[in-house]
Image 1 (cartoon, rainbow, N blue to C red):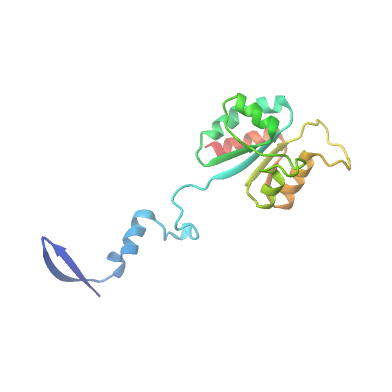
Image 2 (cartoon, one colour; image 1 turned 60 degrees about the vertical axis):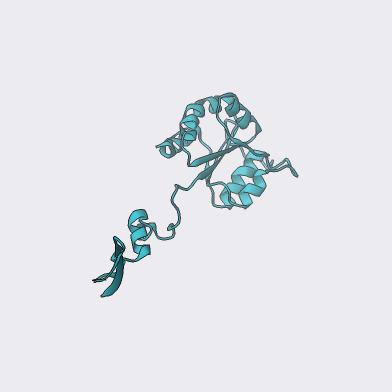
Length: 174
């Protein structure tokens, strides 16, 4: 039993309540926010959805055009922030899609640089569609190869196929 003081029309009255959760300020707030829901443990103070940070580096113009309508649907979501390398950024900008421009790994000393952002685990996902059509063994390190390698090393989701990118973007757009 919990003693409760109530004020009603300027009169103080003392009453009892069997369960403190019915009068606790925190319990009453929980009823409004659902913060104590066991499914939400670790997210108690989060009220807005988490924003996803996605890096776009799309090689061929045909792949950029293929992905464009799907990316446009994705940017309508407030929970997505898009980053893009120079040519992808410029293409999307010409098509009214805003992205944050990031410098390639080879552009040492320029910020923001993908290398730094990868190490800080800024990105939740990297969509890096290579320019080349066929896979070939080479010891040459291109920016794309470095981006893909960095994403894998940091445990960041990596997509390198346009059709898979469309599926994933479609799922994120819903």
